[in-house]
Length: 155
Image (cartoon, rainbow, N blue to C red; front, side, top):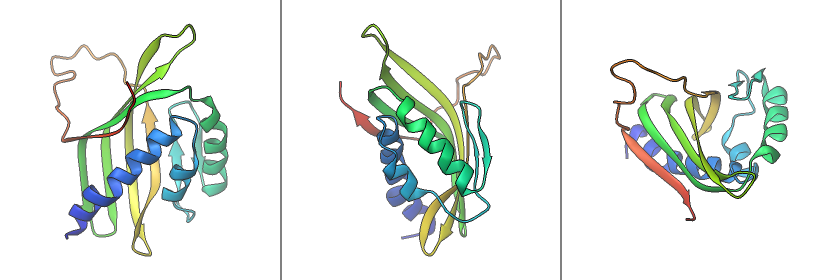
């Protein structure tokens, strides 16, 4: 199996499952996939910009309890590739959460992540997540995902 095939068929499903777990408040699977070796960085969707494992881990510990029950999580990849011991993904993370009052709402984040192979295992070394701005350009939303990974669907 090529490095690219291994990344797409083995690692990415683990990553998506870990993100779905995080969206239900379980941080442990995400922690298993992140490097402890610098450089490691996080530009979080809720504002924190961290360098080094101590800061990144502190933000994750703060973040996990903020999530409400999640009924659907998927990653729509727009671009991804592997080159030697580095890889990246660019996509939209889509999740459906319970909101106050019993209604559900979809949340969408743009997420770019960088991965490094360490000791034969892929590890996340950088994440930049943000809320997509309203885009009125002629091509807004016309880029179909390369692949959709669905980790959680309960409804």
